[in-house]
Length: 335
Image (tube, rainbow, N blue to C red; front, side):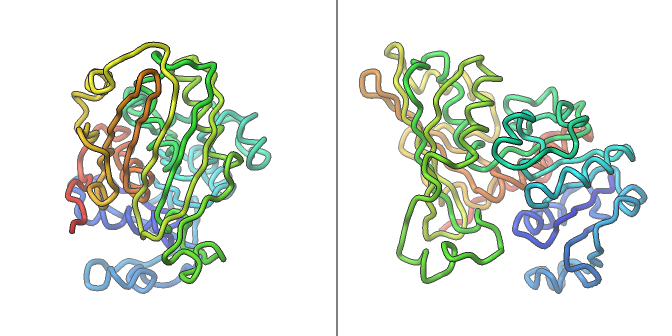
């Protein structure tokens, strides 16, 4: 068994990692840490009662190095990089779920804060599995993509060679409230989100530069990305619709089949996708259609799983020489 740990186990993504690791055939959960240390995991997450008994510690790099070969950092943005730097120096493999290693330094510092670990930043591999699979196998540090960029990029990347890159890309994204994390805010309060839907940070959200940067890195195409996220009255799930202008008339289904026909965790749909069908799974469902040169691409994921924790687990599997799909959830929460 391979000993792994979770730092930041108190949040939703930390809980999802625990749930998957409980039945993982090759990983043994051997360390967990949270801000509220000195308690039991089942007290932190009552849903785990009688499933696991495990002490929650305060994060300590020395303890991680003693107990783990790989660690998941489910920490907030700006909090991961200092801890990751310490772990990497101790030869521990790291899968970081924050934004701290996703972007080029200039892009990161323009939208977050000064970077504390510029030495390791260029060594981080972006954890979008279908496009960086081979690099992840030999990585010591993997940066998990954001949930919105995951759904957007998986949907639009196959079409970039056929898109007019001089025309702007429009991304309309909708996510369940769990994407906002456990901390209560005015916008995530029940009386605000119940029976309601609204955009937030339209055209200014910091996932837009992440999407644009990865399109440029993968296809060498610089595009204007207009990204508008919305919060919807659902616990989990994410639906992203992308609108683009084609250079030529193509068969969208044929393009998607060529890109993803052999991918086990991408399902190509003949009808528009929905979030219920992917809830609780690692799948990304994609649908595309066109009207002349107008292209519509829609993708759906579970924001906590494919958009965070199960994608992190898939990366960890590859990093440790395991089959990519080991322990990944595939049965949706339906009805």
